Length: 205
Image 1 (cartoon, rainbow, N blue to C red):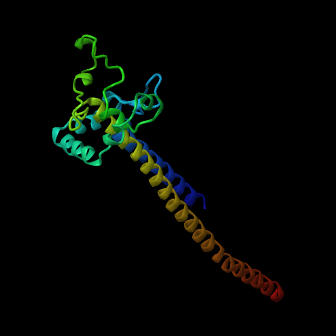
Image 2: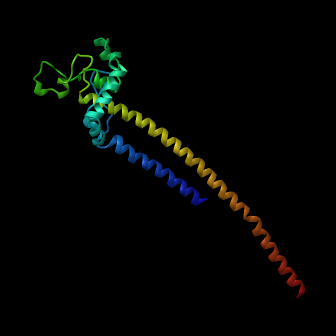
Image 3: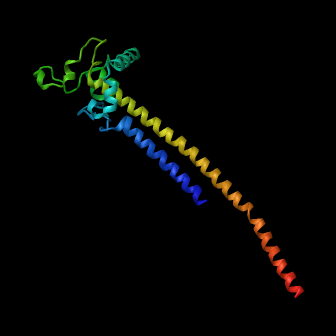
């Protein structure tokens, strides 16, 4: 019983440890992600340096990014907020991709000197086919979507694997208990026979 429970415990630890390592490798890395609050707004803005170098390297690859960019354009994500009023921008939330790809950074001030602005400010265009699709904030918004989806998936995977380990543990322990119970009658018979032999020997003497 104790060996079975120990094996199950090691299984749980292994699953949790593996998930933590994988999350750190794919999502966490050197940055927590999650976005930055924008004063006076309900949405967040996202910065590429907040995500792991492993993810940044891949999303900055032109081949990867052109494919992702085409998907964003095809999904018409930005067309959903094109009719927003200034009040909507103050009061409504946005998805990470909308925040990063469909508008310039809130901090952009086009009357200020260019050297004082975030480089993303000058990648923005009112052209619906351009917008901020080449901005680092857009790539960060995509990574944030990936991070959220992976987090949900990893939780589901942990629950399912732990459920399977739990079922295995119950079956394993039940089998060991049944096996141990089956060994009791033979022990009892052996003891009775031994006593009977002693009695016969005493009677002969």
